[in-house]
Image 1 (tube, rainbow, N blue to C red):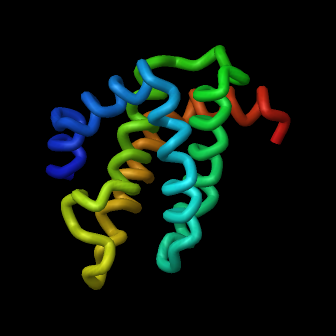
Image 2 (spheres, rainbow, N blue to C red; image 1 turned 90 degrees about the vertical axis):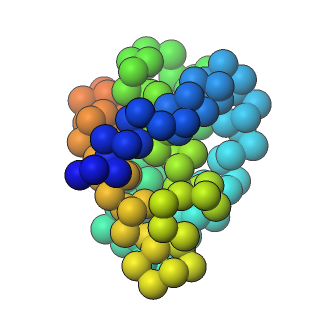
Length: 124
């Protein structure tokens, strides 16, 4: 999908690197992400988002240290994207969550092994 390719080469990955170097930015994003996860229309990716939320929170707090930086950046960039009011299709437009779900699904696929390792570590 074209916007997935565009996503990889966009400012979202740059922002993810900035957030990773400043965990306080991640901490400030977490309440926005929690609110985003509660939106209707996300049922197909809600479990994935909850897992990603937990993963990012544990990385930011230093609880989870055995992470793959590349996969972490992909997940972080996807989460920054979905909470941003500046994504490709605004969420308030009918179908506006489709691009978000696509990016989340793609990030999950790219980071599946990383998230599985985390899930085992977490014990869930």
